[in-house]
Image 1 (cartoon, rainbow, N blue to C red):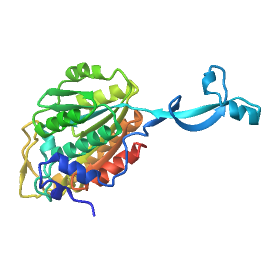
Image 2 (image 1 turned 90 degrees about the vertical axis):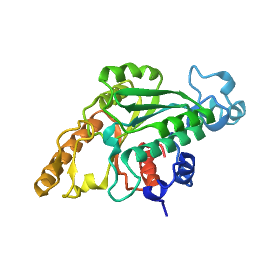
Image 3 (image 1 turned 120 degrees about the vertical axis):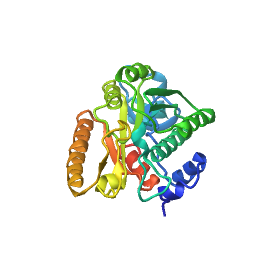
Length: 294
């Protein structure tokens, strides 16, 4: 049985959470192999002009009277970039699960992805967007990098707004070679500097994946009517959630996320929506499968 977020949130030890979530997951971030002149034999194919003569199988030539070359598989590593929205709206808590909010859930998912990248030998880096700034951890490999990324994730606090578009645009210098980008946000602010940056990365031929987090109350419009609410990032607009507000909220929510989904599809960005009450392992498995890399 998969642990619930509430059960996992009883500890602050990200290493322990990662081990539990990834136990038996059995999925990688990418296929990890590509055909070429490596050392692990894969198959034969007909000789083509330009092939290296050393790859011709002379014994097969004697039997088949045709030139064949040996195809092999070689390791294929990509840079994996983890993007975390740590703005104020990510502090939205679950009404059903204590100690679980959007930031906790996003941090946990990205920590697990970092662990998978490390196991595959991929370089991985972290981009944290919070309080109008970009916290950038350059991509690297190995246990020390894992420690750096987990430390940054643990220190992240949901605060302020996204950084300006110009600031984010200047931060895309890391994306010179093809990479895989996993971005987690509630995407309540859309279009936004973050979504614009992700679209720019996609146009630069990077593989971009988005995870949209919501609370169950947000999805079902089941906020208590006896409480007052305020925009966490704007600090204004105090209101109560009565029946009329509920109907209007559902309409606007559906329109908003339909527009978000349409934009992702238009630019070939595969996105997954999840509730922070869902088991982390299930969401992580679904995200990796959706990306075609499980």
